[in-house]
Every structure is written in C-alpha cells, then in structure tokens.
Length: 288
Image (tube, rainbow, N blue to C red; front, side, top):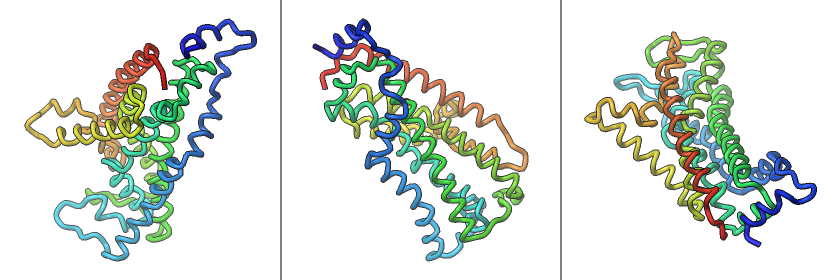
C-alpha cells in the first residue's frame, strides 16, 4: 500500500488518533541525539573561547576611527556577550538556523524513512508542523547559546560591569541584560525567514545539504544586494537590511522602529515560504 493510501485508510482504523502520532517530545529527543546537533552546540559554545584566546594573543582591540562593539569587547562581560552576538548575526547564527530547519524533512527522505513515517501513518500537515517547530526550538537555542556563553566567558575574563556603547554612553548591567535579551529575541525572529526558506527547500529535495546550502546562499545574496546602495529604498525589502537592527535595543533610549520593520518583513516572507512548503508537500508523491 502506498503512503497516501495508508493515510487515507488509517482515518477509519480502530483506535487511530492523528493527534497522537509523532509526539513533540519524541521528535525533540530524536533531533537532540543527532551528531550534527551536538557538533553545532559544541562549536557555538567554543566560539567565545576562541575569540577570548584571540584577544589574549593579539591584545585589546584597537580603536581606530569609529568605535564599534568589537573595540569595546574587553570592557566587561556584557560587552563581550554583545560582541559575540554582533559577530554571529551576519553568518555564524544563520548556518545553525538553516541546518536545523533545512535538514529536518530532507534527511528523512535521504534515509528512505519519510515514506514509513507517512505510512505509520502520520498526517503530512502534522509531520511538517512538528518538524518545523522542533527546528525552531533548536534554532532559538542556538541563537541564545552564543551570547549566553559569551556573557559567562566574558564575565570570568573581564569582570562584571556596565555595558559601554559605541556612542560613548553606557548602560548599567541591570539595564543591559533585559536589553540584551530583547536583542537576542530579535535576532531569532529576524532569522525565521531563513528557517522558513530552508524548511521549504527541505520539503522539495531529498538532499539535506541542498536545502541548508540554498538557504545560506540566499542569505548571502540578500546581504550582497543590501550592500549595493544604488538600490536605494528597495533595500528595505531585503531581510538582510534589518539584521543589525537589534543594536537599537542597546541605545540609551531604546528604539523599536527598525526592529518592528525587520520582524514584520521576516514573518511576512516566512508565511509565504511555509505556505509553499505545505502546499507542495501535501501534493508530493513521496517515494523515498
């Protein structure tokens, strides 16, 4: 019996409950035990130590011209955490998000286990919802892990103190931590478009690397286009244009405008991409 046939016939099977298939906890445990999850977590946790070692070897970053978060990294633990978030925004955090959401369905297809999941039977829409939510959970963990470890490492290395800002002002540690949390949440929400793009590609291909690489490549392309000033106001329609808007949360007076636009754009694109993923997968003839 085909996977589609099994889904249809199972609707009338005694004792069958679609809501009991593929429990969220089971999928979380499955993904947590995968080697790529452990590798990504280890790399992100190690990056603050790598940066700390680089500062120890090369000395305190010089301050030439306009001061940035990197030049202030050694000022305090909160400064080091912000520096790690700054370093990760452009690429380092994009890859885990694309990996966790782009590898999820395509990997099942590449292992030839997707058809057996559907024959279990797990409704296709439920399978996609479970896979995407688990991917988002691990993506959010990855985004939070980098600045959190950076805060711990930076505090041990440079002490606990105020967050110094590039403009010359500073925020007390008590005020800086909630602002940093807002910045981390924004980074995650702004990258949901990457997650949705990777997930859409994951439903369209049996090659996990193709789905992950496609989403990362799209992120790079939008970043390149955003650097072309000749595009003018058209750049505001690119997700990459707003990727550093989280810095507005760390100003003496928090600004919400850029972050609202960035999140709105990310979620709008994500809705379209997820609709394409669900539409295509529910009509797909799954043979692998």
